[in-house]
Image (cartoon, rainbow over all chains, first blue to last red; front, side, top):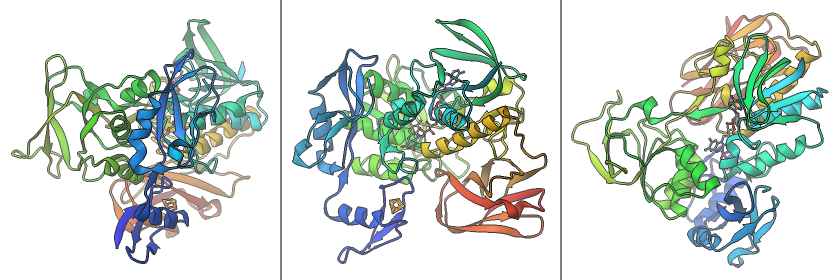
Length: 113
Length: 412
Ligand SMILES: Cc1cc2nc3c(=O)[nH]c(=O)nc-3n(C[C@H](O)[C@H](O)[C@H](O)COP(=O)(O)OP(=O)(O)OC[C@H]3O[C@@H](n4cnc5c(N)ncnc54)[C@H](O)[C@@H]3O)c2cc1C
Ligand code: SF4
């Protein structure tokens, strides 16, 4: 049995996962099962950070990935964002990097600036 | 005389404005001291907002952006860069700004939505020197996420509240080394998911029952001493650990921002926020409060929900629909540190009332009980409860019919 905390929503259910059968207990909703099974095989995280922006009222524009990316790629992604500079105006949802690392997630702007 | 003035343009102020507008109020003014609406959400660039409200995981600015967009075309007026200096018992708001100078505005109803501020080193009195490099976690968050300044390279975080945890991850991803997160209590004050994704993911150690006992450095911080504490929270000699660091972040709690509230003579509760009725009205009729100014919320979704209640009740007051006279008091029993609201009045159009509270210790498999004069009125099972997680129960109003006071308690 592996104990883990589901991070899919702020409730943070305490899950027990069987290492061989991947059966899950303690989940408050079905997403907990998906989380636990991914966590055992291919853990992923949503990355949020900022990108430089020129011509706006602030120096940094907040961004996030539209889906979780492999956990091991988080630092690489934040480093990659340093190479980008946006120019105002940008809108929430504008794509900064399409299909980042080919993993199916985009990096998008999260504030109109 | 104005209809409605809302003090604070964070998520609470925005949701209150929207709810009042939906109920038909057309003269609404939001006064915000910052240049932009959105409050603390503008610096909370991480995701985790809006799961309850919008069914999606948004970042803070996105969540605020949704409400700002909802208010577009409603005619809700905003005075930004405007600081409210005083609230008088006759519901006059005194405010100052560069654009308008000093103004006094009276309104039929007021919503207080000023949020919280961070507890500082002064408020928790750590001994040692006073070099630069000691920041509150929220200030560091604002520098990094909005201005683009990383405030240090080797970091120790005191306090395991959510802001500190989020900053541990954020600074690590930006290239800083976070050496430790130190918490004086035997449990963390943050959400479980943040312990996992902000500390465990990056192998940052969490020292529970530990505290910072010394701060070193002349110009810039050069190191701190951390010690284990006993159950009276006193440092245990011989447990000293020294960390070489240039930055200490304080994430030691938030204090509801209630100077205006106190000035107006409104009764304050043990949350440091105003005592409220179930419709979020304070002890001063026509003045409502919602969001972090009432009690510290972990989830913005519940801030919006509470604020919608305040905005809608303010609309009722403006249209002359007054609440019932008699009130049931809500008292705290075993392991419950506070409740919001503290009083529940009769309501014809609502079948149930929601009560939020926090517990004062970590517990497993317990029952929340609402106790009346003679018997337990209703109960709710919980597998896990912790002080870091706000709880909410919904009590059917019929059960309160013959009570003058009810107690919310945890049966262990
Ligand atoms: C660092 C951090 C991380 C968080 N993470 C999450 C998360 O992951 N998920 C989640 O759901 N929630 C999270 N929260 C909680 C959520 O963001 C807050 O509960 C929410 O923002 C509180 O809203 P509010 O409107 O009450 O206060 P605030 O957002 O603080 O807004 C108050 C506003 O009032 C203004 N104001 C104050 N005094 C005056 C005055 N005298 N005159 C004029 N204006 C004034 C302020 O400038 C501010 O804009 C987090 C909070 C923080 C601080
Ligand atoms: S199992 Fe469901 S309810 Fe529990 S934390 Fe995960 S997503 Fe949330």
